[in-house]
Image (cartoon, rainbow, N blue to C red):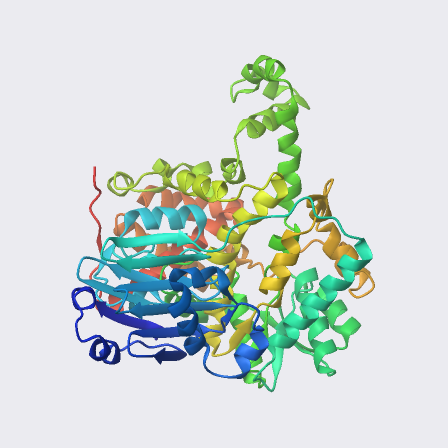
Length: 600
């Protein structure tokens, strides 16, 4: 797989540089835009802007790297908070004897690196970082099985780190210093008339869609039939004055198909609507390719239908697609936000009362056998779990038990409490008073930066088409952070402001529906399609032979769990299959798989 941004720096030469101009001109940094002077060089991918320069102006002309270098000369690392847009960048400064790497607020563009005392190597892909070696991190595999992706800064390769969203790293004589460059500051006291906020919001989204069109003749949109994708599709048609090319995926499986809602949105906005129904044969043809396209194991099952959307749009003449990602996470649209508000009410119960009732609500309590009280004791048990661990109360790996799933030798190499510490550190980065804003900031990391955006980015790259995210524009994000918390979650009503602001623009059926997106009926199909079942069984059995998962668990998963509950356990079969398919790709390129030894 080819990377877009890469390079390797000899730190010994940089820190001891005497012939500065010669050193700078000899560096082979690769990116969309590269600029240098006698002391510095900058490589950039994406469309960054400095200060108030609009993303549209930045995208229309070259030279963002030169502008960033100019700002760097004046402010050094102080430029990071001034950068907007989607970007990954590297600056090498021989005069200051340092290297600076940074990515945007949501890691729309990514950057991985490997640093030791002599060398700094980097790439936008973990598997393209020079000198990374073939040592895999077993903790990263555990994190993958827990989260269905590997959260930054860890990667599957033991020597490679990925910059988290809104972070930068400065490498100098004292080592590598990672820093957050965008503070999570919510203005929870700001109040404004609803009508003014509505009009501002609509104009911001319209402008963001317009900016994404610069330099493209034909731009399409993903259309799932949810509020976010429907909004983007409608705005696209409004900006261009033509029927917006929109692409939807359906599934011939009960409970998974949302094509009717996509059709409602398409009719309402007069879209040029393209439909495609993914089949089990499509999965057979594409699972290995999709798994192997990513730079590390990735288990978001929506990646495959997203790939088919991009593939069809590309064949239809589109050079770019617009995605609706971000609406839920900026404006409060995920059902867990309301669910956690219910659990949080328990914290207002007097502590003396809680101490009295909690001993009666354990797993072995006889109250759990009394109809009606079982739910009440369950509520108490879940409410007692502090945030953010409570968000993973029903995590598939912990429900099954790591010792049940993982081979003993592999389990001995990992720390099963590491995901909890990672989540707690992420949770602590945001100091907003309200629960809803803290959950949103948490999801910006886990749902957006580490899962949904890599899904769409990987799918569109594989299809050979660009992608833009109008709802994640910095001005839209800043606007969302200034809204009152109860405009995002009003009692138990999700994304109240978003829906009310778009009432009359979106069809009522779209506003009132529950969003599912491009969910994949993999488990259901794996129980009915012999070839698909064989692919899964072969993948899982090989994974067991590698010593990662227990053979007895694999047998039980395939023969008992999956047939009984295909929708639920199909997710575990999927993430294990994708892991094995990714490992096979690495071996086919000559990688000798071996695990990093645990440091006790």
